[in-house]
Image (cartoon, rainbow, N blue to C red; front, side, top):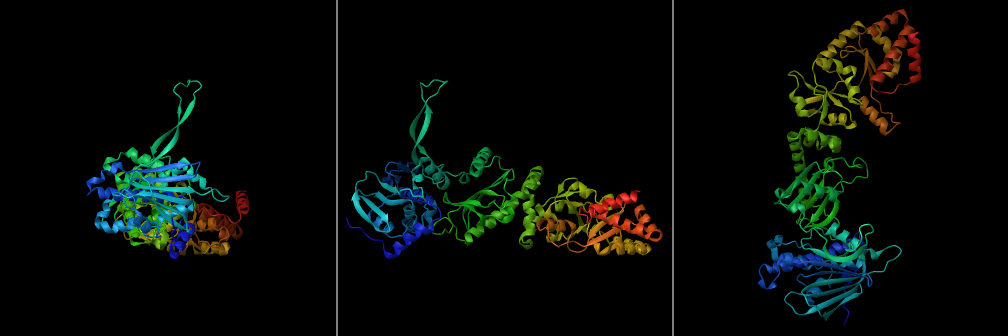
Length: 627
């Protein structure tokens, strides 16, 4: 029995593959099971035109056997098998794929099979965990069986042997444990069951293994029960994935159970999105909108991505490229036979098919959210509480590239409706002569509602959107306008065309007092002006162009030492008694007038939610003026 050598190039490739191509050693079982599935599929395909095969699809199977004492793991199939020539071509030449050749031969009919292999290297991944592999195989239509044996890069032998049935047995001698690697885990029943369910759960042939179970002894007393262990052959995989079934045939509770089990969530999904596409790229997808926000969702530890399958075999646990950042909350699976996989099948090549699938899924998710918004408003508001912030981040991110896609999905609290509303709803209620979408930003709805700058607008029946989250104002800046209606803050700019004229007239009438206050406050404020927006309040603080006070707070929170500050413009209500007292003191008691100016400025800072420069000084000043 002469040992044959791999070609030099093949020896280098085998060494590279064992040590470099695959990231996780556990992948070997996926590869060996996939090869067994391919063998079954080939004979199943042949049975369509060859009645002598005598097997139907339901008769094919894959079996796992463990011999812990001798450290042997065997994967058997009753598929098409191999002869000597097949062994030479498929196992003696690395990167020669019999499955790939089969798909080339059957051409368009390959779509009726689930043949997975492409590269001819998956088999050799077993050498990551095994120090010796024997392949015992008998090809359909032949009475002769052969055994291929190898310890790895040293070469291989092929000898005749006995095998009663058609098919292939892959017998792997698991390597001894080392300080760094515990290869023995792949002889543990629980570990093999775990790997089959993780990677090969949707192989469409049953994967069976004898497993140990425990049951109560028949004659065991109830008060002191005794148990016994027995073995039973069990099918480890579910075979038909739920996403391959018609949606009409799947009950909601089945989807819910699949979601909870698959993604380890305690809550049912809020919405199920089933996709079946054929055309440039064929794929099926089953997507879920979670019913609750994952505890780590808004942390750096959260990983987005969909589970990616090719013909029912798990390729990637989380394929981030299938989801845009603004829909990162989606969970689900995508299964496609058209993917261009790399050699290890652990990573996906960035190709046209992937981009097409991702673009289609983005459109589908958007349409489902619009449908939820229009058909189930309460349900959408629940979704918004969970993931609305993510959509806002999506508007702001990538320089506003997705603002047109997401703008109609946004909700903001309305001063008149007392609930979240869409921008479409706001615009539909605008007064005929109203040019702007008004908003006010603050820490809470209650604080915004009491802001002096909102009083006149609310009295006139003008609707205001209340912004309470960091991203809200950034959204308004990025959107700039919605349906040709510009966003305008009631806190930072003049709110109507006539306001500037009224303020100018008031400023002329009270110029001396306003100039006095500016001189008293110095560089603390950019400008002191008469306000046309105040009614019952004496003072307010507005920001200049660009940065708002809420943005200033955000940057201060992110970077406490930041020197970024909004401009401070002090607006005084010249019709308020407090201003009258100030104006009288300017001439009668200038020192007291300076204290009034300081007091009003500090009050404006407090109303705006900004820190006082000298809290103790403010308290002392109030007490002094109360004497």
